[in-house]
Length: 53
Image 1 (cartoon, rainbow, N blue to C red):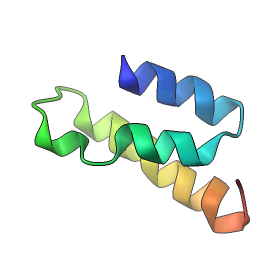
Image 2: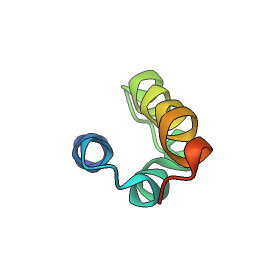
Image 3: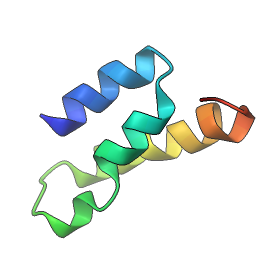
Image 4: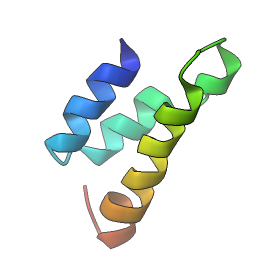
């Protein structure tokens, strides 16, 4: 659920909430960790890295 919400927020350019939703996700046995952390990397590359919110 957090991953789906993070994807929706990413599409709305709400980068900080995405980071907050996805950080430390590795501490839970999340089966799609690779996809979630790829989204997190996109946030840092596309969003926060360019002065995004």
